[in-house]
Length: 250
Image (cartoon, rainbow, N blue to C red; front, side):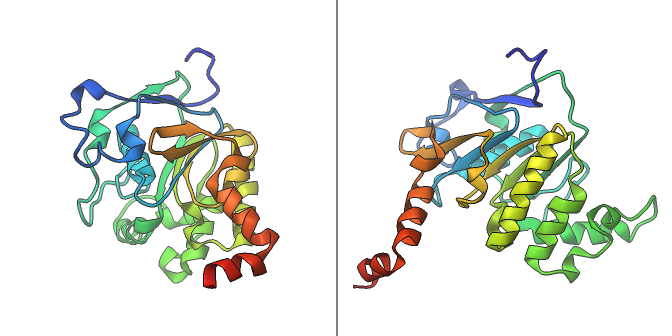
């Protein structure tokens, strides 16, 4: 598929390996980055899964920052920083964009969403148009539980025709809310949206019309859902929890 007839906004991500000073230093030593060449993205949903420390969040942060999102999260219009902790990876990435332009977008980082909520409140104290919080359901995100505020973002703020980059969006969601999020993702895909999601959730990564990349020592490997460690571990546990607990606690 050429960029002229692409259905999605972001076609692929390429690491400019010739510019990397050393693959022995952070963030280039991370498994998700060290073997990265060109990561081709699904027009609808791309999942990136892997163990903690594998570099999936760093990779998403680099992609989001290269796209123009604030490194701590939010839209392209957010320009704040509570603590400069993002890596330099974005400067070494090249994004292949289609001629199709996204009308909406958001970068969700579970670990810094509190900071986004605070920035919204600060911006709404100033003069201007209608309050930003109206787009999130009219209720302060700080006056909701962590899970409720995540859900309000997904259900109220995301409007379609957008690129949404989500880093562990299940972090504050119950299993039933994860199922509801799965349904919402499908609705937004139907509204010409594209998602890139880093997750540990076997529920979310079950979405059928997607590419799933699992991180191992060789880098990002396209993997079938049923072959992921997340699915296999959960299946083994739920299939016989008594036996699994006996093994674990013996």
